[in-house]
Length: 265
Image (cartoon, rainbow, N blue to C red; front, side, top):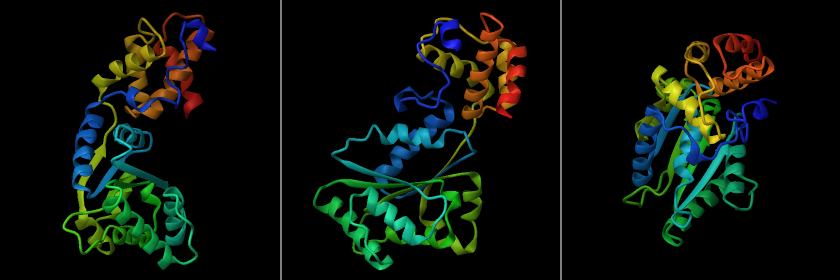
């Protein structure tokens, strides 16, 4: 309802945003540089971040820029399930027939990776989101998918995305072989306090705003309540603007942010 009140083209803090429109925070820019380097090396990478930090969106920003004739991105998210479930999901995303046995699925996926590299001259990238949920045996089988003993260089780039607990899990002895293969580790941090105002301005301008819609005290209240996590900022800012519109204010105040807190608790 506040779109009309503030003369906005769309809700500025909605979930849907094009990768190229993501706010370039210091942490996300570092991730972009290091992820680009990982893709060149075709190694195994690990990206962690708290829930709502924007790690998946930041990675998608890099991956969507890749030339589809040179790269094949396979994205899977398996919060539960065993190795068979994972292999079936990868096969499905690669456009392969779903075999009945684990061994057949493993061979099929590795064969397709080899075909892409040698025949099609395409670099395959496997992105595993929510990887902190994966069972130990699933993590190990993903490592085995990257083993091509006859090659001088890696064929499959494997990227794990997950919450910070994944980094801790990978220090366990059972995952030592996988941990030793990881050549890139990035932890995406929340926005710094000085990044909040530019972030709000960025999102508001994308929606057509021509002037600030949060007073400085409101910005401080936003940051204190969200610790700089983009998803929390978006949700609280959305409800704060709604509270401001309901009171017919032309700018959101700290009181509007406080009034919106119960909506995001």
